[in-house]
Image 1 (cartoon, rainbow, N blue to C red):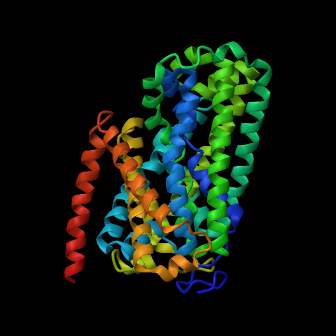
Image 2 (cartoon, rainbow, N blue to C red):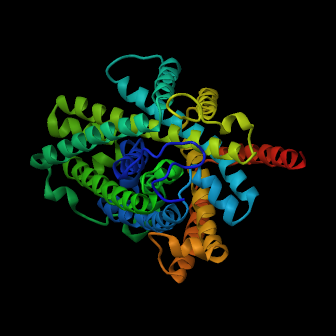
Image 3 (cartoon, rainbow, N blue to C red):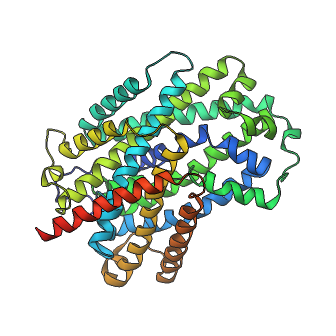
Length: 433
């Protein structure tokens, strides 16, 4: 199928490079930057900046793999379709099944933190306000992926603007002495902070999940992912250095709201409004992007008979997977009853995401071996040896990251294990029909 032709599933190709960047950056730049800088600084001191650069390494590996796969096989619901086609149908199913729990947890943690930030100005009922946000996101997505992507673009522009204002406005308050000593906690501290900071970059590949709705995907997806990871790194490094220069590692490390404290220190009371506005836009953008992706892999699973067929239908004047969007909304509403502990929720999000990355690495190897024609036709294709090496590195890094999280909280592992068991039983029943 030529890249600009309408996909056979009825979805519209409405997303360009800007939309891809908005989805990727909007997913990655979210709640983590407003919470993870403090514990990372506690572990590594000023050298947290080095830890952040090291945390980019796994995401660079995954970004290259995703750029290749997005150029070779642009499909909606990619994290389900790629493992299903190029490894085994069960792998595609179980990864997406786990991502139902992971995406639900992601939306919940994002809405919870957003309400908490707004709550610094106005007292709001937590769960009721979270539900109202879910309804708003539902309405935006019912208007079509083009409207959702455009809303991402608007929020991205506001986010980058507020981040730039924070960074440049903080410069008069930055003191060089706050950056010394640099590696006060040694090499061990630098590496200890890396698992925390990896969460900053999760989601830059998000637009591949709507590959079937991307214009000229062979060019747009690799380019969009490349721009996303560069912009994400620039935003995080600039914000982190500004916060360190204003507060210093001691104050930043013990802060419960590091960017809020840095904003107040640099701008006075007005800094509170700037940081809260930035947080609302960044987190709101992440909620919207996460919801889009969740509805699309539900749609893809239903198209292949792994979920009820109604979820795989496109309907309405905006050509959206209406039932899949409503199902995602209902799952998120159920998620309102999950524990409100941030460590629990972050792990429930990150574990399925890392498993998804590992499965995509395996799918890349499978594609090269099984479909050399797709490999040769890809607009972006590293050499076969490079793909094999990156895929092996990606799987290995993913396993290490998942193991490292066990000591923080075992409960998400138990929850996901139980959910996976239910999924396996459901899969066996579906296979017998």
